[in-house]
Image (cartoon, rainbow over the protein chains, first blue to last red):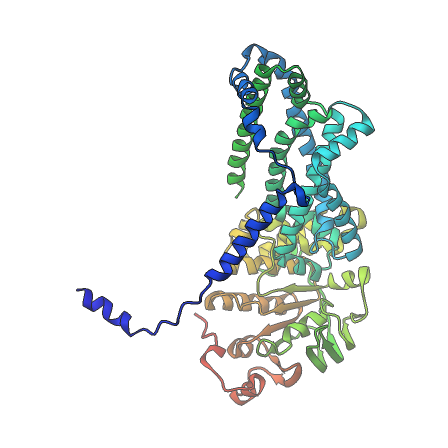
Length: 273
Length: 273
């Protein structure tokens, strides 16, 4: 029985297996050396004091046990800021969605053949996206003052950056045969974009709009730390008072809200696909 | 359907235009010479096939007629207009008089048949209606009557992507007809269809030619379709006209000269079923 299966294999002339392990070993050891080097303060690496964990463990354990005892009585006070956070997230995503439609169509090649305006829109949008959300929030708090408004503006800028980049790249990489037909029929680019390209690519937009909303709920929860309104401001305040029981309630609440929004968005996206 | 109901439905018979190419050469930016010094005249109301293998320049020839491909030298004239050298609004205006259908149907698949057909009315839209994308009552009537002509009126609210290939090509024909064109261009209109559907679509083009009195220029690579549906045939090989004469009398030797090789079974579609 074994003879029948083994026999043909013996006749194969298997070429010698290439020796790859020296190269692999070299790469792994180089990575390891680099990692170690970044942790040596003597040669300019970051100073990581692992001993701090051991020295402060009692402190850490006390805080941790405090966090594990949520002060449920605090919950009613979190409702209003949490609603403000959700409002910022939804309104920010909605405004960004509206702004993203023309910007995306101007930033994609099939819907804007003019290289000058296309590059200009892309450059501006890349700046929106490259600046981290918390940095936007910090700058905007300095510009328009503390509250929900700078948070909202930061979210809009960040969302526009993400949606325009992702959707315009998806439009760039897709086939658009209807464009040639419409051009052959004497249509203007605006007519094509308005009546064909936008409805044809709407699922791409919806997908990224939902993704932006998910990101917003997560981001807006911490925007308050830099003074941009919402639950984050309360979190920062309770932390300042060392009220870990209250902090614990806030963290749990953020966790639940984020999970619920993500689940809802996932269901919606599956419906769209 | 009788001519009376057609007139009632608002499809006014258009006047056919002649097509004239004078010493037309097209060289693509990558250096490929797709057309070399092609001169030919197609009379108003003729139905002419352009036969050649892929790469022979027949797609370029048909796209030079409506300016989708700019000519490198020579002049292209359709009806009262010189297409070569036109751009912008003037070019769109001329294109409005030239309907075109494609091998891949080129419909916006996520959009319903109705809105796909209305694309044929874009060239006629005024500035404000073009901006807003609102069709006039006359536009709707012309589009619906075109759908009626090709027998697709019952699918008017169906998404184009959910139709079969033959149905999609009929909608594409309706889109071109709703331009109320003077010339109909067809670039390999049946190459993606099965034989019975291919014959149905070719018959449709034949009917458009006789009943609407349109000049029809159709690219084909199958010899029997050219013989069966067109009176005059232009053979292209490596960007040059190697045959121009009656399609029915073209001999096997003529086709072998056009193809530059012996006749193979796949050069025929097979008889009408």
